[in-house]
Length: 385
Image (cartoon, rainbow, N blue to C red):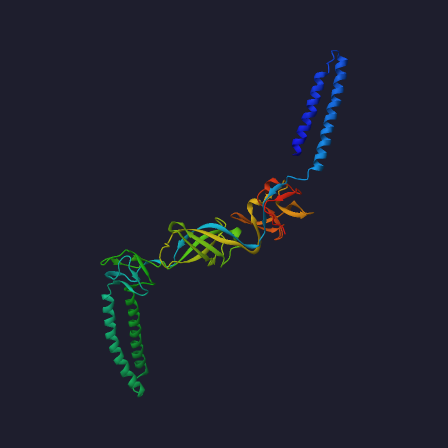
């Protein structure tokens, strides 16, 4: 309305002046032209002065102000978490190649590939006939040695015979007993047993093959308890500790697990300036396999009752200071206030602000990029206290 009146009055004045210009004859001499120019410039200045006075009067009379509308956002302290993203490789401590302790011909194979076996279950039998014959011979020698010892002991108890004969008989008996224990211990090595419960993932040897401590017989795997190992930059050495929250995502099998860091390495690798972390993962259904790639998010910042605001509201001034605009009540007016802030951390679409804001502040949300400090604004949805 204000601008319309100004335009209308200006048009009437100019129309009147144009009419006068047409009615005024133009001088033909230089002196006359100069004089007429001076006269018309005074008229022009007078018109400009009139327009300024009219505009001022309209400002006084116009009580309806057109203020810029903004949406606001209240601050509610919340739990803020920040995660770093890394990749890791899945492993298991129970993934071994079974090799025998004894050498010989494999006479029996008790398992098949893919079979589940128990801890201590016999997997292979190696030919032990020679060793058993040796044990039989020593047992016969022990019987004779036992008889000799018993006889010498009775005589010695009666103080008959020499002490040396008694001691020799005793020593001979005990040596043979120890030899049988040793041979029986060696005999157990001819049965190859499972060191833990698991699955025969690969059956390498067959009946009739020659076995030795250097010969692999089978691959035994237990996937119940897996772990993920990954390298983390030394920059996070103080923020990532044993027990830190970790979210593991196995994208290839569409499986996500929330767990904790089970172990943090104490050595910094000079090659890539990183330390190792280990995350234990339960795998009862056996879906997680060794060497499976895992995407890991490890929590390095955890703040309760934090001031968290949308990141897109944060601006930066010419001095490099980060700030946001808030609304403050002054004399019943909504005035824009510039607040300098300190952003500690940003994760996703939110930022944790450690300084510059309180829960009483009202943020300008939509329209924050189109206002300036100390500007009066209108609230689209008033929510000031």
